Image: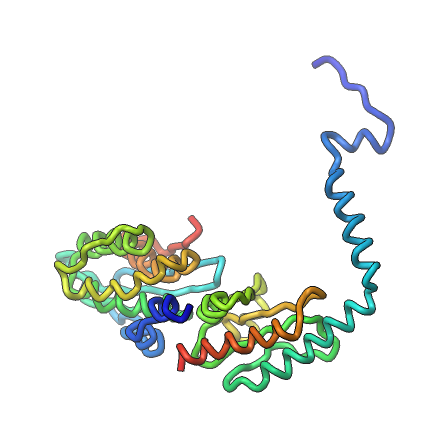
Length: 146
Length: 153
């Protein structure tokens, strides 16, 4: 190679195929979300958070970790006598997907003295019925780890 | 659905998980290793006392993890006691095969070893295989004089 020539900005920094599909996808996602409205989405998520918090609180031995007033629609919890990895395997069989373990937040978990939690996250596409499914599936956990 | 889960969480496993045997440190240990599964956060320490003839005199563990890993570690420490280094490593090979292949491994030649069959339910739950094998990886590392074992290596 003897010499290089450079295109004008911004093209000189855009070697290879630009992320065309991703840009189109982002556009579609923005249209979808703004069609529903951010306020409506937030209201739905808060409703699910409150509903699920209330339902989960009725389970014996279940402790919700993180109860800040304006927290987002995720619920981390522990259950007496059942490790989060066992919980997640069991409720997975009911079609409920959660994250379990240290959530890549080991320093915080260590500081709080909580080795692992189970975490359910609610989005705009979730429903109250699905929160009920989670609660029912946790009943299976109780049944196995009685 | 509950059938597969009952197969995984058999009474023996729940019992060992709730009340693990040899949950301590071997006082005069001459082999020790820490096992870590960075993906799930399970961490356990296996300590062994191996005599001059290569016989495991005592085996114990400490740590925190799910019912499967606690039960596997508990049963392992019971079963390797009184076995030689080579026997313990051979046992791990057979146990590992039992957890990861669909073929039936015949353990009936050894009553103690046959008890490990209760953990074969992990086959139906591939993400849980490492829960069952981590204690064994850790014991193998300890026997080889290594201080650490990781599931991601």
